[in-house]
Length: 275
Image (cartoon, rainbow, N blue to C red; front, side, top):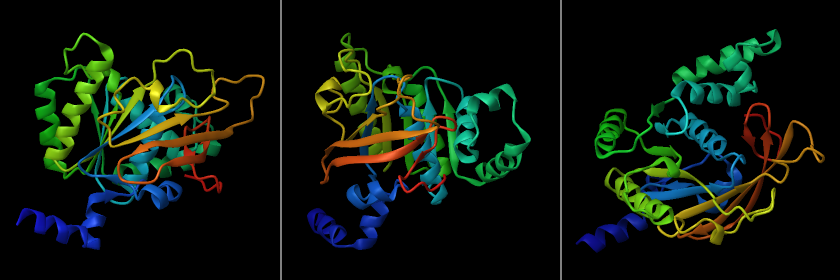
């Protein structure tokens, strides 16, 4: 009877819709459909490219569709995450928000962004130690707020596994989190830093550069900005942001180009549509 139920589900368009959460980026959704519940999406890049920015932009776009999202940060504070969200929404530099140096030209946009953010189903959890007790705490948060998507920033700060080898530890942690996603029917996105120091700056890493944690992941996104570290070739406030679907258990892969705002950290479709 179990296989019969699954076959019926596969043929049901309603079921398919329930199991996939649109990213809010049409370019991606047309190819991969979206992020699937009960699966792990890995977002990998070298340092400073924009892993956190990618997760925050996804958080906003998914929340705007009415889907509750939990953002767990191990790297910084909830306040700074909120500042970055406001920066993306208002086109204001989050650092200026932190300093309190906002020009009159941006105050209206910032106020509109703040009012909207209050209405969005976004929950931010500020944690610095990953433990079994923390997992139970987050589980209660997920149940209480009907959360369907969770983003974790980042894998290297998850210390549940005690394996002495960092690569093996990351793999074990992903397996634990994947079981967590399956148990609570969540779409789970995790950022991870590529440790390979031999990759030339601005070049696209390959999946073999990641270090092994890509193996248990269901879909792997590799992120790069060709001008991320450039001074001589600085191209202005908007630059190219490349998202490569390097692995996809569910079907198509490919490379997609977006626009990245150095000022606000917004990642936009190449059409130039504002966030």
